[in-house]
Length: 118
Image (cartoon, rainbow, N blue to C red; front, top):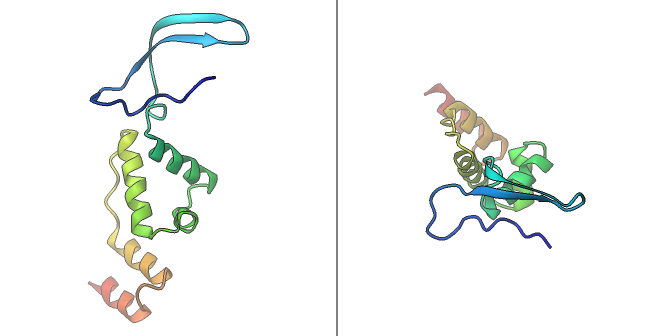
């Protein structure tokens, strides 16, 4: 029975290469030097987060609800996932952060207005 790739592998910093592919229904085996895409080498935690993110159609607030963690924790995990697939996360827009905190009830409308005026 096939098992998932042993990723990450202890003491290895480079992505693995695949040297053999087997197609069970046809019995064909192909040998060569094949690279894995960025998703194939994700850690189990990042892969689980990505699956959830796709399942909720990219809604980070829904990820927050499903995982039962804070929005900043979800953003941090999303940023970790982005780095793992080779993207550098964009810096957060301070105005968006204020509006998100207001929406979540973490600050009052007056506090939000003061922060947005700065």
